[in-house]
Amino acid sequence: MEVRARAPGKIILAGEHAVVHGSSAIASAIDLYTHVFFRLPLPSENHGSVEFELKDTGLIFSWPCQRLEEAFSAIATTLSSTPISCSVDHMQLITSLVAEKNIPEAKSWLFSGLCAFLYLYTSIHGFKPATVAVTSELPLGSGLGSSASFCVSLSAAFLALSNTPSVDNKQSGWLSLSKDNLELVNKWAFEGEKIIHGKPSGIDNTVSTFGSVIMFKSGELTRIQSPTPLKMLITNTKVGRNTKALVAGVSERASRHPGAMHAVFAAVDFISKEFAAIIESPAIDDISITAREEKMEELMEMNHGLLQCMGVSHASIESVLGTTLKYKLASKLTGAGGGGCVLTLLPTCILACSSICSCFLSS
Ligand SMILES: Nc1ncnc2c1ncn2[C@@H]1O[C@H](COP(=O)(O)OP(=O)(O)OP(=O)(O)O)[C@@H](O)[C@H]1O
Ligand SMILES: C[C@@](O)(CCO)CC(=O)[O-]
Ligand SMILES: [Mg+2]
Image (cartoon, rainbow, N blue to C red; front, top):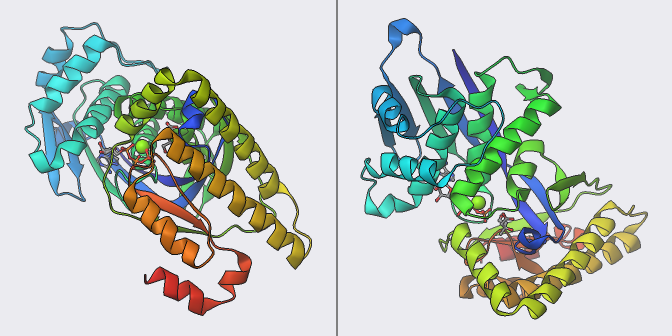
């Protein structure tokens, strides 16, 4: 039995970090995916291990099923049909099973991803032999939700072969899971994200699971419909960073300056709500399209200023902002910041002027 699954990355248009503290945020799925191939071997092909191949790095990790079974016998774990959080004992066990693999120093960032994989696999399938291969079109650790699309695509593949999920429809050659199954995938993916991020809000796994554009606040999703297309340029600073550390840094700042940070998070909440209202507003003519875009630009600038207050910008991000400003384009960091990607709104008028556009893109 085998299955292929894919889940998209995302951009955050407004509200990252503040969303962890209860503010609203807006995210959109993007057309870059993590792909998972998952195979449960037939008894005649049984290789007796759980094999995990990261195709982009050429690394293969393998755990003998017997080793997993013995290790897990030290803690009481059962297969679970409903997602449960990884306990401290359970996490220690998973960490030691990953540590046995001696991950090369230069690839140590893989550690949390391997822990999330092992947690999701053993929670859903126990110690059955399996072959799992992952490849991603997303840059890892760059703010485009690679961790969430990794957890969503793994959860979807594992759940697809754990029972017979009901399928709603077929889109571009892919079967789509029914709403109930998507909810389950999302919950498992959130548990994986917790292992990678520490304290995720859930926005990344939710938009990766359900797609399109969403407003997210305290675990609740509202779909956003945009009557006119919105064009965004994504620039990758290629400065590596780690979402877990950045999220923890903001929480530490909030505990040092609770009043000020509360006000910052409240301001972001207003920005996200206003941004959502503008996206949804009908644009009747060129003047209203321009007015709409100008408001969005201003909100993006304000949101970025508040992200600077939270301490998550970076010199490389500010340098991209400086370059886009030369062309009167508004930008903000997207995702956790600290490096990673920057989002720039491409107004309709600039799209008509290809010379400016290509000049910027090649800079
Ligand atoms: N294809 C993958 N293979 C293995 N591990 C992955 C993969 N994609 C993501 N990961 C794990 O997720 C980590 C990156 O997650 P992180 O949350 O720091 O960045 P991101 O999700 O790309 O950005 P953001 O959270 O800001 O959107 C990697 O270090 C790795 O542990
Ligand atoms: C920084 C953050 O707000 C978004 C990361 O894409 C973290 C989260 O919401 O889990
Ligand atoms: Mg992430």
